Structures are given as structure tokens and as C-alpha cells.
Image (cartoon, rainbow over all chains, first blue to last red; front, side, top):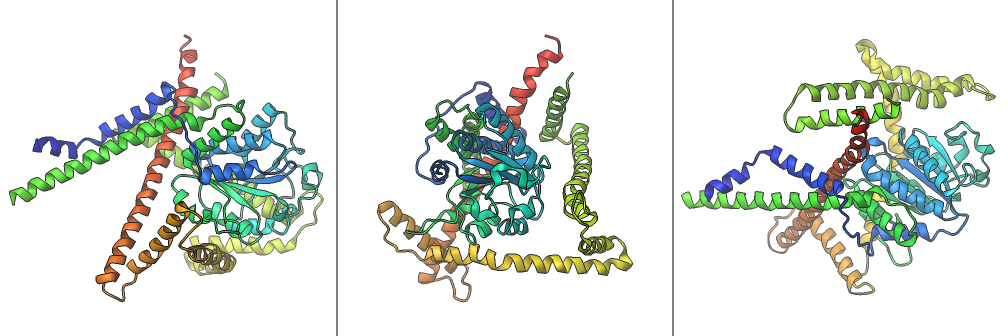
Length: 290
Length: 216
């Protein structure tokens, strides 16, 4: 029995890799689907704040990520853009990360075409600008100075939907999808705390815990963030809420990925338990030998 | 074979090359790794020139389009050149000038807003009534206050952690461990999510193209 625990503790890590790979591939290949119960929490708060925007609102959506975090943040972006374009909300996209602008364009064109929305009337992509916090501070005083043209080089003044949008305060909400720096903390620092514009968004699962303090709600006060989507789970929550509200919303990749995520987590938990059992058994044996 | 197909096959084969490292280091992994490093360096150099330097500096300096040239842009240009002096040992000291400007301006811009958002506001959010508007909020409030106070006691080193102080410090370290555990759980989720993203690409974009390539 002692040998069993010893061998278990020294299991070849390649066996674990194979099991994790199977735990991910098999549920995806079999298209397993687990229910996504979305209760009260940061995901629901964020969905509700987007859903409660009045018609003709203007939302600034910042795509602050790149392909390295696409599996987590792109499903969120698709679901949020679908939500905004399904309602009568105008969308201004931009990016603090260079490749965010082209990732945004990909989504905006595809969803806009499918829902019959019109560029420059319902949405515009201003593109990428370097600067992070400095850029956000600049947007607080003049959008046009920071983005003289959009991604396609159309001058700011010739874009009809930007009439009356001078600075960040003119937006009804700011949504940031953040993979790191610059990202959520910078938008909260300037847009939410200094200018009082509601800020919400999503982030990678790694960074989610550090943003939870921004979600605290004091009676009679606006929180620093309206809500937060954390990682693939947050994206799946949003997709589930969107499909609950709009039955015709196309299925997203996040819900499909959650079954694989759950099975992979189960495998990891089993190995953590087995590893600890092995450690405890071997320690007990060593103490017995003394 | 279309360019899209070339992209899908290139992505899939490079993914498999990189994952082959999980078995052991090998030439396929090395090839993919070096290709990534080289292409990243080239991509970012070109991207920075055309998306950062050109629109933000060069176009303003020479007055692109109908705009007038802004000669003041010579100053940031000079500072950028000074920054590059780091590679010349005799002139390296001059690179401190632009660096000092960046550090000073960065600190000045961030200091107050960072402290307000991540310091003062968080302290303010901890000063809350212990009894909330129901059982749930009351438990939340008690947890927040207890965790903050006990966490701070754990980092109070001027008094031995014995008696009440020791008890509070133990509660504090327990709360910290719970926070680290939650953070680690999220990290595991993030890594698995990246694997899922790549698995979805392989299964649903690459695998369906295999019969077409093989003429089946």
C-alpha cells in the first residue's frame, strides 16, 4: 500500500497532461453542455446595467486585449456587441492595445451585417491609440484631439453619430475588456472616479480577484464598477443571460467551453486530493518509522 | 489552397509544435519558439513605426494632410534619440533625461488618482455599518471588516503575535490564504480557458479541413 501512495505521489506529469487534454477535448468533441445558472453577482449586475441603458444611449467600448487572451475576452466582446446592437444603443469602439482595434473591427463588421446596423450611424471603430492612462485623461477633455480620424481614416467631424460626443462625460457608459495594463484600473481611475461615468467590463480570470474591490456598493453611492465578467465563466454568464433575453441570439463559444472547463477542473481537483492523500500517507509512514 | 487555409494549417501545426514540449524539449518546439520570437520582434517594430511613431509624431512634425507642421514635435524626437543613447556607453548618461521625464510625468499623473482609487476609496468602502439590510449583507459587512482588521494585525510586527493579537493574526492569515486560494483557482481557470480556446480552434476549424486537403 505504501508503494501505491509513493507511486501516486511521483506520477509522471505527462500522464496528467494527457488526462487534462482528454478532459478538454472529449466534452468539446461530444458538444457536452452543462447548465449555466446565473444568479445575483458581478456578471448579472453588468448585464443589467447594459440592459437598462435607455434607447439612443452612446456606449464607449474599449478592446484592451490581444490574441493571447482571445479565448477568454473575445466571447465576452461578441456577446456584449450583440447585446448593444440588438438594442437601440450606439457603439463607439476603441483600443488601448494595438491588436484590439482589428479584433474589434472583426466583431463589429460581422455582427453589424447580421443585425442590419450601419457604420457611422450605429457604430464606429476609432482604432488604437497609445498612451494608456494619459490617453484616457486626454479623452476626458477632447475625444477629437485624441482620435482625429477613425480606423478607416474618416475624419472625426464627418462621422454623424459622433455629433455631440466631445469628451468621455458624453458617454452613458464605458465598457472595457481588459487583459492587463492598460485596462480596467485606468478606466476606473479616470472615467469612473474622476469623471463619474459608469464603467463596467470584463477581464481575464487571472486578474479578476484584484478588481473585486471595485464592485463594492455603498448605500446611496455608485460603485466604482457597475459589474465584472471574470474569464470564460463571465463570458458564459453573459451569453446565458443574453440568450435568456433574446432567444434568437446565436450560441457563443463560452457556453460550449464551460463543459470542458468543468471536466478539466474536476480532473485537477481529483489530482489535488490524490496528491495530498499521498503526501499525508508518506508523512505518516515516515513518522511511524521514527 | 486559399490563404485562409494556409493560415489555419500554419496555426494548427505551430500549436502542435508548441504543445509537443509537454512531452519533452524537441526540434519542432524550438522551431516554433524561434519563429514566434523573430516574427514578434519584426511585427512589433513595424507596428510601432506605422501605428505609434508615424501618426503621433512624424505626421504632426511634417504636417501631414492639410495640417501645419508642428515644430515643437522636434523636442520629443530629440528625447527619443537621447533614449537610444543607452546603446552607446560614452553617451549613455544622456538617456537619463527622457527617462527622468517619463518617470516624473508618470508618477505625477498616476500618484493622486491611483491613491484615490486604490487606497482612499477602498478604505472608505471598509468603513461600513456592521449590520446591513438583511442577513446576507450583514455577513458580507462583518467578513469585510473582520478580514481587513485581522489582515492588518497580521502585518503588525511591533507586538508579538500572542494572546488576542495572535488570535487576530491567525484569522488574518487564514483570510489571506482564502484570498490566495481564490486567486489560484482563477489562475487555473484562465490557463484551462486558453487551452479550450486552442482546442476549439483545432477541433472546429482545423480538423474539418483535413478531408478537403486529403481530397476525401
